[in-house]
Image (cartoon, rainbow, N blue to C red; front, side, top):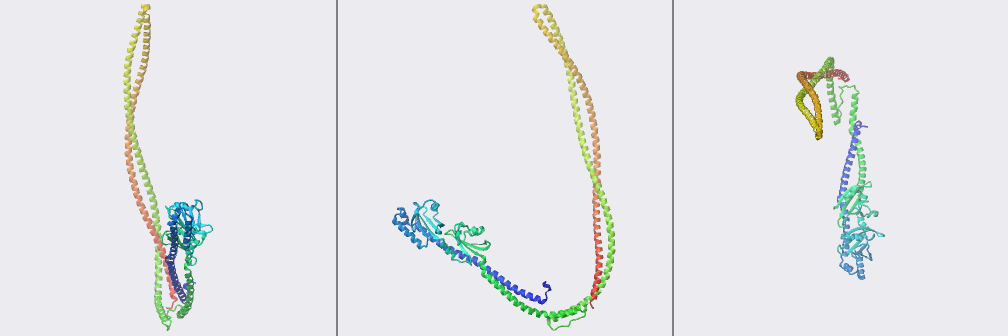
Length: 639
């Protein structure tokens, strides 16, 4: 059931109960919050710091006593002198008595002395042994070689349990001492402090190793992070006067606090469940809720009586309204004025409202007739506007279609003009390249013609040299003939000389033979020279013909160059015309697009006008229907 459907009486009761409950719970919640803050602040700022510091002071005191006793034993001049003298039995008895007195007086479990040079070891019970560097006595040699004067350690002795040892040595002397105290004594100190119900205090060394805890299984073995977490351990193992952190351990919210004991190098750590800090407050919360419910029930009964006294006159007035409503809207009806002051004002207001409403509805009835007549006129004009708008839209669409077709044609013409201009540019470029190639061919042919002339000159010069060679060969032939003749004469003279001219005859024969061979070679050379001369003359003639043909080719190339220049000029003219056509076509296309856009805008406006006209028609019909409904509603009232 929704709140709006409740009666005034029910709403008054509901609001009163809610107000009481809300105020009571709100005040209680604020008090609980403030109390929790105070408890938490008191625990974090006062109780926990005082507790851990109190324990730290007691631990510091115990450690200071152990250090002091160890220092006094190691530096006792009588003991040192006795040990240097050889440790006679009489002095040994005094040493044992001395150690026993220190043990009893200071409530220790062990007091001992060790000679660092002889490694002899005594305690309050007498001489024990000479220490050896093995698994049992290795601690002595490690401590001796460490160079540290003081050492605090936790040691688990078989049969004795865990003990706390304080050792002191003369780093550069003979004396070394040790005192021990049972961890149970430390635990008594720690257990003397009670935190909430299950909170407790334990201790760890600088590395976080547990050295005093209610759970002896953790001693010397477990690290602080093993029983908390790395984040909590990191915060607690900070060398400050007080550290505080909140975290979960095994699913339970815990509050941790720590303080550093400088003399011992240990941390005193407190652990308490957060839930135990608010146990009493939680009980108080239950009591507060119980009393809140009881108070709310009492005020609910009071609210029932109070709401009844307020709602009764309103119920009487509602009965009158119901009777008025059953009178079919007779606005001439008036309610008699009651005696109750608040209700009387309400009835007066209602009568005034009814009179005002009577006048308003009379005016509305007259206005409704005018609205109905105006709506009919608007509907008639809207229908005419709708018809005209449809005609305008159809004609506009026809114009837009024609312009779209025209725009497409103009775009095609512009594209063709651009293509023609591009082709003209390509042709002009090709013509220019042809001119360049033609000019290059002319230059090459001219160079060839010059080379042909040079070759012709060389061949003619060679022909002239050939004539000179022929002349020389004629001379050689004459010399050969004369040599042959002389050789013949020499042979004749040798024959006349007989045996005396036989050698000369042989020489003459050889000379004649050489002359004949020279003549033969000369004839061969003559034939070669004649053949070469004929071929040279033929080559000269061919060169002349080639030169003439080269000249003809140069003339033809020059004519081609002139024709290409004329073609290039014509192409440039065509390119200019095509560019003008393309530009004009582009401008025409832009104009067509502008017109087309405007036509589309006109078409859109026509559509808008048509929609508005249709809407006006629909609105006019709606107004007519509303005017009729208004007449019907007004007619229900008696005016």
